[in-house]
Length: 87
Image (cartoon, rainbow, N blue to C red; front, side, top):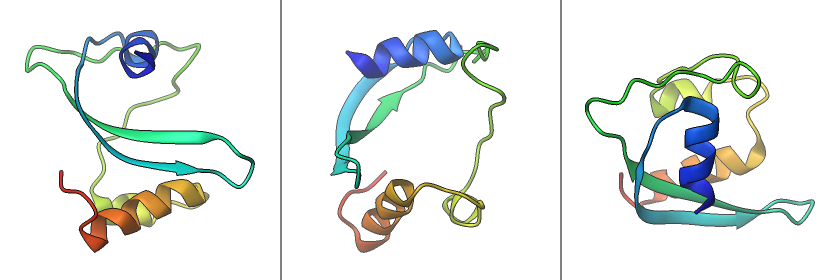
């Protein structure tokens, strides 16, 4: 599964996918999926410097305030606010 592979490549952690929360298609026709996944308590994310500049844990309000956040991410946050899914 792409989610498992990407998290291993980018953060060197093994995750367990739990549930697909939401999907969308970008204006340039890229299909995106947001997943709920379990990160083991013992996991220690280590960013791959070729893939990831830094790691940040943000609240929903903090994410909304980010300059340049992609429209698809704002759509995801809006869907969460509407109750389309729960975290």
